[in-house]
Image (cartoon, rainbow, N blue to C red; front, side, top):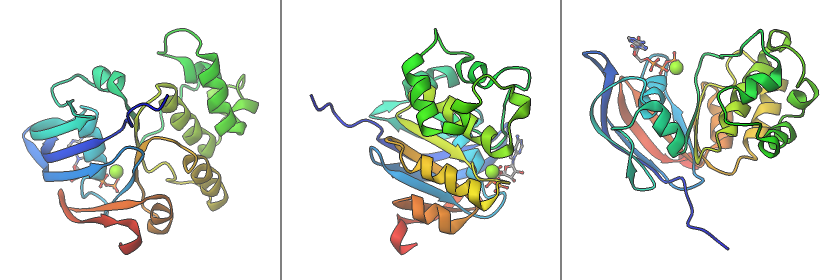
Length: 220
Ligand code: ATP
Ligand code: MG
């Protein structure tokens, strides 16, 4: 039957940074189940730090991170992933010596055949290259692999840090087309504002670690 919708993310008054250095100063926003939020702002304003803080990879000085009412901020990164947070960091981490498929299933329990086939359906290029080495992948394919790997964790909230960075426009089209089919809460950090607004239903603009604008994407 119809379950309760999952993927409500509530960020409250987040203060975080690296060691004693505070970068985020009171960042708050909410994304509803299956909402698509674009996290925008100039270089160095704290977009990546925000995503890294959600997954527990920075030093948190205060504030809350609630997923479907459950406070995550006291949990280790692995427990946050198990709770439903999927994360594609800005740096692409493809294992060159492993095949595409090995890259996808590394760290997962068993061989999740059905989930793998779903990932290949979303990214046919990966399916075609499943036995190829990670070293043979183009930049776009590496980005697809990073997204596909996060999806295999079956997240209810997917955090994407500039998945289009460095890709040719035609490859950006392919990737955005796949992302538009995702059926979960998504936070997208993106430099190309037009693409971000096309994808998102709401936006948050950061400046120097603070939220300076938040609202619906169509009025941004
Ligand atoms: P970009 O658009 O260039 O990716 P960003 O908005 O993602 O920028 P962040 O990477 O979050 O910005 O950086 C915010 C601030 O935190 C910057 O001043 C940056 O120098 C600092 N910073 C980022 N990573 C670290 C780190 N590992 N240790 C210390 N300071 C860091
Ligand atoms: Mg960044």
